[in-house]
Image (cartoon, rainbow, N blue to C red):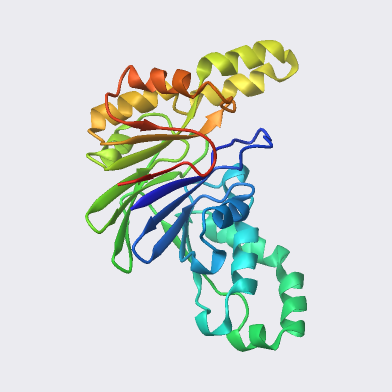
Length: 283
């Protein structure tokens, strides 16, 4: 099982970091977890072209986690040979169907134009998407891959889900945006790899002081994201083997990786991976 950080950025635009997105590759499966900005570009850089993505998991419906979903859907459709055409499965919390329905309405004219122009697309039957909405506690079987859905705490955003992906004897726990909670600990229990979005509260507070007009909005984010230290504590408490940090708020500056890593290492003695987009680990 290989975990690739397609995008490690946040809602704050950064020329070096795509929006939140993670690729889980195992066997014949290429699973994209969240679709932040430039997800498709990073997928290509990782060597996985959109036709070979067979599942999308959405942790929640904040714009920075879904804003490239339409690009993945469209690009996959128009680059997949007719003989390979198969529905893209999009799995997420309640509300996902509404988002996808609105997205398809936005894309309706584009689909119409392409169908009128390309006979093979007409033969394949247009865009095909299967939407599955999960509740916390549900288990979704995707071929020989098992995906458990767990409640996470990103309030006031509700519902939000984290996913425990099991395949070929390996377990990856992908949390999305959340603060520590009992369900998060259960999801991560003895996982081979645990991927957590994180922020640095000290840096966010410093940024708020420098930008008083946006101070309240910046400090608001502190109460619904895990800090780097909290991610380390969750990893230790849950007995995970490898901690992967992503979605750095504010953006991690080159040369500060060890500083970020040391904050998690205060609480977790195992390997800790972080870095630029396309950083990957294999378990």
